[in-house]
Length: 300
Image (cartoon, rainbow, N blue to C red):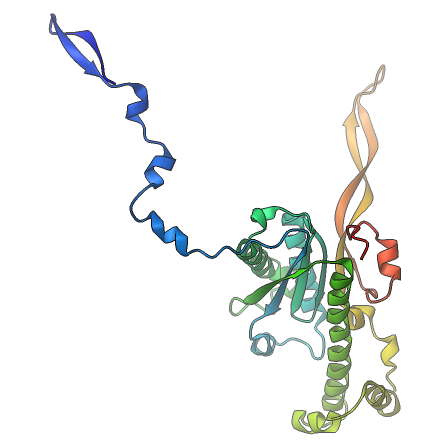
């Protein structure tokens, strides 16, 4: 609807047409409507099922080459493992619905609580956000762990996948699987590189030597030939890294003015949730008994 009013120009009154205010502006929703909008129908609905834990697992892409180019220490580079954990902590601090994360070697798994509604539970949104936050953190904190002596030669990349687990037992079995994989891989790599670095074998000879051996055989090689007790190895290497939220008391000093007193420094203690790292067994029940708040009760 148009409205008219008398306007005065050069001393003469003229009738002016004035448009209502609403007509002068177009909302973004109206602007979004067009004949091209039908292409949205090609998008796939990737909403994760309700009442399921959402696990996003990242793996380093072509990290064999990456570790060689950046001169990682074999069989384990403590700097690299620390950087992985720091990057994972950055992800958890950004996405607080992640209740637990587990990592080893060049992989990390992030578990969203089953009631999470982050990004409307869209798998693609969750995976890409975790991957991008982790990758950028890996680059950002690189110097903190590797210093100036080993510059980052090119950007690392990580691929991801999303898997749903409907019960507590399924989720615990998944994390147990990843930790068992950590043990198997670390034992093999420890023996392999000991044979190469201390035993004088080539990589081909070491691989041939270990072909068909069991865990007991590998332990025997380490102990009898190199006096290495694998059980005494660092839990970080054998068990991987588990990140969880824990409440910790923090004491800070603040300047405060108390009643009838002059302003002075006072120690204030507050309880805050922090991401804490553990290098412990998650296959047994002790860890879950000590941290009952991680899983939601499902009577499974």
